[in-house]
Length: 616
Ligand code: ADP
Ligand code: MG
Image (cartoon, rainbow, N blue to C red; front, side):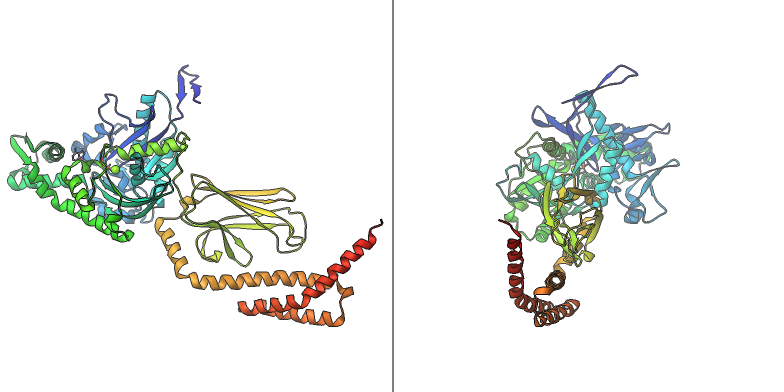
């Protein structure tokens, strides 16, 4: 249902659209797509010509900001006020990029190595998040013009290798642009979705997504199972893309005519770059290219281009080999290969990829639109319009709580599908216990001290009951956005307490990988200590109930029974203080064996007394 709001000042009706948009926020180009009449559609400019918005910003001296093609035109004339490739800076601190200044014509600064980088224009500083937000605002505006309504929700794509900080920065950019970012999804996942791959939960397959854009190359190996996309491996080169093909053409022209290097007139070098890109694109569908710049003839044919581009293409194929090795797969295990990115329009690139994998590549969709189209499909799924499709996220690490003795009790195991709700029942360990502390952890180790604490709270006002009687349900609800709600409820009294944890922002992929590796390396030691702690917990419970038993049934126990039970109980207490799991178990067994007949007798007496009391 669309909401209607009226601007009281102007009386103008502003419709709110409930469309969720899909955005490809690219290094070179960005675009927005949505589901129009049931079909994923990229939104074009007013003339219906271009869907791509160059990811370029120009800061006018007057304070205005140009985005897209208008900004791109300023790249040649005012490079220091014109910003491109901001995606390379997103979520990075200065230490990460200080050696890369030569790639940028504008100024990247920060005096603090740890802080996130900023860009300086005049005497103002802009963070990459703000700059990305400007691009997102332009895209948001574009679709609002098309729909004649406001949009407020989006799915945005990021490279599969983006870490948590980079993903969070992308979310924040969305927020600044006035968009609620419902989901960040991986670009290769979006590309696969655009081709309908993974829609059928029955099929299991492994695919490769080859993405050659303007300045970056990514190869991703994805395993798709039950509608879940898992990244098995990524490889690539963050400084290899279409720009390098343009440079190769310039180099060829300079070799033929060295004079052009010296030409500094009228932004000649910038115009040369533009001609080189034009030549490259032309050769994707023609055999010859010819133009002239300041009376200098610039020509190149397709064969020559393929010769000078071979090195670059071979580098991408090397990355493909590495990704396969990392995923532990042979290329015959790859069922489909999807080509993504404007540079895969080059027939030679497409052919090389197809030859390497021994398959015809999936290329029917526009390679520079396919990621945004997939994002819009994911958006439509989130909007609930495509009910036959599963949501695509999984939890990377287990989520659980601390139980007695510092043990981790995993409630949502890692690799669970999201959203999910799991509840488990617990009880108290002390008589009359009024409060229960619930500490929430993330990680794979058996002891919570080795995992990461996400939060804690106290369930208060549990009505006093003997240990083991209260029924406390702890439930974990993890929603599609990674927000975890942990709730504790005492079922007899309905006392409830809960907390909300936004867990996904805390850890980088690397930290997550480290936690997993740690858990594997320590599995044996962890298991030993878990065994000890579990035995000790059980012993403590038995000690408590035996003490109680001795007091309650003092009258019916013989002196010998009392002495012997007390002795066995002392043995168990001693064992529980030490580190030997087997000794604890043995002491428990001996105590149980001795007291079981006495407990039976005590029960019989209790029942008989109760019966006696009954007046029939
Ligand atoms: P990104 O994902 O990095 O933002 P894109 O996927 O939009 O980038 O790819 C941009 C690159 O694609 C540019 O280098 C551009 O020159 C190149 N490109 C676009 N169309 C063609 C074409 N027809 N032939 C060759 N290269 C092309
Ligand atoms: Mg891209």
